[in-house]
Image (tube, rainbow, N blue to C red):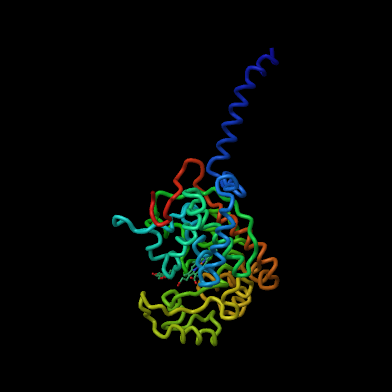
Length: 328
Ligand code: HEM
Ligand SMILES: *[C@@H]1O[C@H](CO)[C@@H](O)[C@H](O)[C@H]1NC(C)=O
């Protein structure tokens, strides 16, 4: 009696199990694969690497932009190239939003996309270009190799209206910053590691003047504050002005642990940067990364991988854009 009942419930159980498994499968980064384009466009990853290298040789700061693009695209909902869309029909794009201030080199995304379209149109998503260009950009800047999966698809809209709900600001509290990263699976150590991206690039005066005027933030090294005042001589910089300071004066174009050494020397550029040393949750990691570049690179690679797998569109979601600036 018991055994017939077991037999009868078996198909039901298998069905339930499959349903459960498919639920877990959907909506997870698991739908991404290593070398997703191996059949459909076998040269895709090589082409992206080649284009990123060529662009870096001509305009070194493109590599820096690819790294920031990953943050601004993946943090807002999904790694779906929504960042790359232009403002169309009066609907403001993420790219044009206040939070994207200072972002540059978008036009060279088209260079990478064109090379891919020549080889295999229209197969490789703009979202995968965002991810893989960041990966190669990190390598160009002397950072670690990161094994990234592919298969992301492109969004059909830009989410400018919600950008501020996802992207932390330069003066946000450490607890807010930690919770934003926690919500995409990056823990406190990963958050400290991923902010090491601020070892490269620049910050415009608009994001710095609050720390300099009317009084200098006491957590700033006085000599460094003088340097910053020299770079940003007025308390009200014009939004269109190009005045800026480098993130890291020592090794501005190398993705290394100098960022953490600077923080320990009270030479953190943004409030979010400097706060990493004063908060008891984050400061031990600052010490560890400052002492060991290899360890920093390992943790940076892990955190970037998590960021790159945030909630991708896969399967029949979204589309493969022909031009990264516009939906098809
Ligand atoms: C709490 C989180 C973060 C905040 C508040 C933040 C904020 C900022 C700000 C205000 C700038 C300067 C923009 C300008 O004035 O031109 C900047 C630059 C930059 N950020 Fe972040 N960021 C954060 C996390 C990240 C992450 C996770 C990455 C990459 C993994 C990243 C990569 C960069 C890069 C590469 C630059 C330099 C861009 C350039 O020189 O063109 N940031 N960030
Ligand atoms: C953070 O800076 C922005 C300008 O970049 C300013 O509007 C905002 O009031 C500041 N927030 C805090 C908490 O100081």
